Amino acid sequence: MNCIFGASGSAREIELLISRLVVSGDDSFRVTHFVVEDGNDQIGQIMKGCPVISETEFFTDHAHRDANCFLGFGSPVLRRTIVERLRSRAKVRFPTLIDPSVIFDRRLGGVCVGEGAIICANTTLTTDIEVGAFVQINNASTVAHDVRIGDFSTLSPGVHVSGNVTLHSGVFVGTGSVILERLEVAATTIIGAGATVARDIPEPGTYVGTPARRIAK
Image (cartoon, rainbow, N blue to C red; front, top):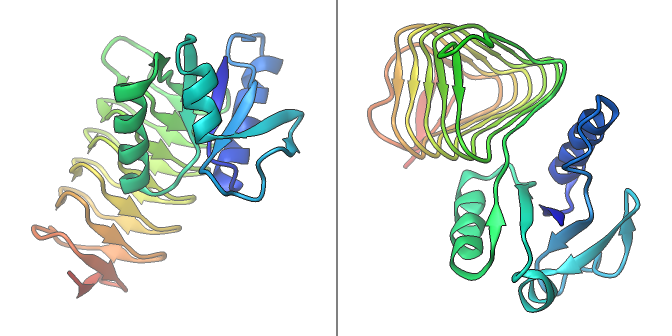
């Protein structure tokens, strides 16, 4: 059983990534179900050839089965919540997904990718990079050398992370943002779309603009 939690655009993009892996010869992750919150009006529909079921149905009828689960949410907070719920109630695995088009250092230790991480199409990761568990790196992003990306963080499409950067856990980086070299970003920080981070962010909050400045805690 292979389930994508969520049915939004992010979930459908993950289904597309998996379909590309299947075309490349890896049939082990072929999607069988989408799972959405109770009350969602998509329950009972067919999406990309797969039934959409409720969380209650999943936990009642399928939680005892071996299942590969993929998280179709951009929100680091929501991904963490779903992982905790699944681990406490179901027999699940969280495979790593890397689109066939991704360019990265495949040598031992070149790029280390954690459990449940998803790296989308046309992304480049150079070398000596650590990608934490349940990280999502979206289309056409670039990550330079000696970068550490903490668990549950999200890089939206077109993000550029320069060398020697550390993003602590649960950081959300908006579309098209740039993080300059040798910087550190506090856990749970939100960086708005198109922002340029030009100095360390030691305190979490929402940061926007060029250079990025905090507008909310």
